[in-house]
Length: 318
Length: 221
Image (tube, rainbow over all chains, first blue to last red):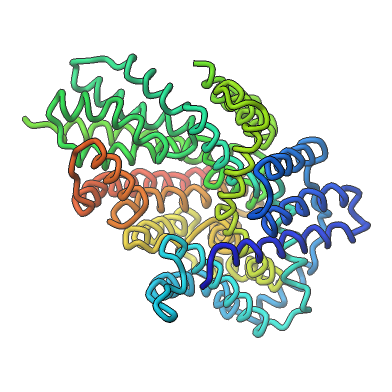
């Protein structure tokens, strides 16, 4: 049976290799700190399952300390020159797209098939983990295709991964840390306090204001919590059901569906949704941390208006 | 009320552009302490949840492949392909990707995209390549703007496409929350009511991409 643990070991090997390559790169004055950051993360992937909660917590604090005090600095060396890459691009032509497109292709293929495979009655992959395991398998297949086709030095995938990991830097860890923050919020009861607050603020009576409070509330709370899934229960139970469905006899299906989408408008506008909004900034090497959010804000605000009008016009009996 | 201090730290920390890792960790520790968990329990909760959330980082497994292909000139090739297609402007390249991303997400094919797999190696170089061909002397600020738009299209496409698919996480969450409150909703109907917003998203963002084209041309003159 293939489980997430297998993928964690792979991630451990990858981050571990990135740490070792950094450590051996004497041209980079920051090499020890880079190696410490990736090395600590590798420990979490390799043996995190068996570490005590406190040890894992201290490991996070050590990673954050390294990232805050010294940061990750990439050595800035490219393994091939622009001329070499252009020559290679001309030589391989569109065949270069094959291994790249193999990633989504095999992810989808695995997604559709591996969930159905059973070995002596037991499923090969647990249903909840199918998507992630598919992605992991697809990257391994694509990597094999790329290696067979291009025949680079054997260490090339790891040195290239190191180049990319170093340029993404601490942002690579942020989505996982935010997920952990969400858990602390839940344990400390932040959701309960917020929904009590939301319920006490609501304007009552005027239908349009109630709808607007619901959609804007969804977007704002999503911006604070970082994802619409955390905001939806709070706003639905705080405003949606009592005011819009029970009070104004609105259609619960429309209110729920478009309410969730109003939350997605919030996701587009918040750095708390790091994997969507901050990670690409690092991946695309943009100097402004909020460049992607800036590009999304006009669309998000206009859509929020549309969503408010859609609920107001469609969800209530005339 | 005190447990909300973590949220305040998050807002201020991001507003003042402090290191997000530091901001999030401090917010976690303060929230735990304010919620009465105690220091050891707070750090433990953070650590436990971090370990449980390792799946979030699995997406980085794709980097060796992407790096390998970049080394062999994938970005350069993506740029060349678009440069040869005269009618493929920056805005139109992004518009085509928006349509593709929304349509495939609506069919449940959410993994057909993503920033590390698609945007960095393919979509961003294509959008940039089109601008390079049309606008000689492209400056860095414009390049960054185009790349940010490439990332935005991936997000907007998947967010406002995926809810049309009935088995996606958010639809199942809605159904669960509503059922607990004693209201029955059908996934198929929830998915249908995601369509008006999906159309609006395509029209609004598509129009903005075509406007981006005009602005790029004006900026070049």
